[in-house]
Picture: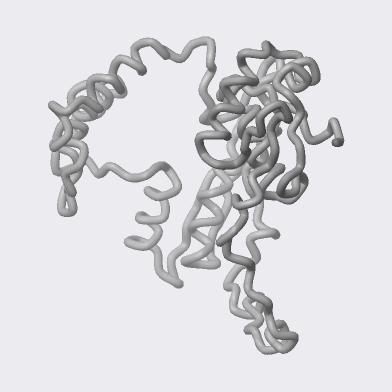
Length: 248
């Protein structure tokens, strides 16, 4: 059995037990571990991965409980031959399907691949000075306070509050916190009906573009500026002008 199948991602977001389980499930469902193949013993797997045997035993027990593997007395663990039964196979496409399908490229109003987009290195957190916009410094994030807020908010007491469908207004408690705590710190005074909660900056910009911009509108933006501003407003008008920033 190839050792390359048993490489853990070593991510802090998952326990070692969960990582072992995920690697094996992916190998089973992907066909790298065929039905009735023998799985390394917990001792062998622990040695290969450099983890405790107890961690592997717990991962194997989870796989047993979910039916991915079976245990044979005095023989070891094997891939359950029934685990893939009943799984839907991808439909076979007729040879003419590719010829008859529409050419969506011709329908595009813009070419997303040609747009200037935000570039963020995948390993930005390892940079000595990661000047990346909108990211969280893990060393400064109040994780304990955040966890406590989540614990309180997800309690039964507040179930009605976060499961209600505010289809005609935003969450009144959230609006109040924004109005009384966040905006005043930025020198902004507003009433409740002047605050609109969106899914983020891009959603807010799209709403503004939809409401205010027509084909004849001229939109001016800073250069250098936020690339998504340019991309969103160009969906509405071709008349997007850039204004270079001065040294001040």
